[in-house]
Structure formats: C-alpha cells, structure tokens
Image (cartoon, rainbow, N blue to C red; front, top):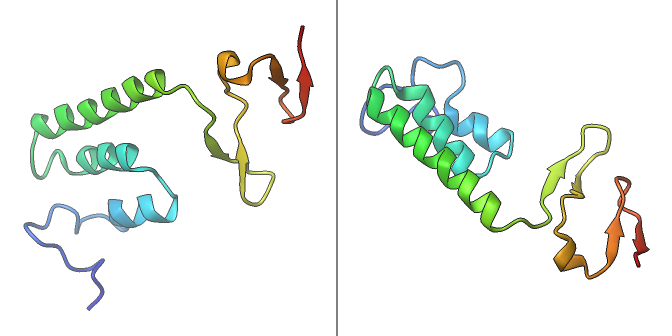
Length: 109
C-alpha cells in the first residue's frame, strides 16, 4: 500500500484528492508554507480554530524571517526551465553593485 494512502493518527487528510504533503512536495513548497497549508487543510476535521492559529503562527514566522533575512531568494520562473536568482537584494550587501531585472550587473556611484 502506498504511504500516501496510509495515515497515522486519524483520517483528516483522506478526504482530499491529493494529500497536502504530496501537493507541497510536487510544488516544491518550503517548510513554513507547507506547514501552514497542512493546518489550513485540516482545521475543520481535526484541530478547529487552534489549527487556524497554528497556520497563522507559521505565516507570522515566515513574515518575520523574511524581514529579518532580506537576502536573494530562488524563485521559479514560468518562462524558463529551472531556478533563477531573484533581484530582491539588499543594497548594503551589494556594496554599490546594482542588479537589474534581467540579472545583469553594473557599478553605481
């Protein structure tokens, strides 16, 4: 039997055509986002409002960490196969190098 058809500790995911874990894996969704999705999917059938609070907590953690570690991120580009470096870069890290939207670099000042 496929592990995706098996659930340990309840049946709150079995109602879905695709389990949250498979959805997150196939779509390469990172941990914090995937955990929020898990709680949002199951809240009516398992933890109630507490699961909504847990999902909110993981979203708040993601916001806090994104603000704390403002750094280049890898994003999927639908027009290009593979990953591409985002241009959301902190100027203090670049030390006078600007990165344009096409990821070309030029010296400033």
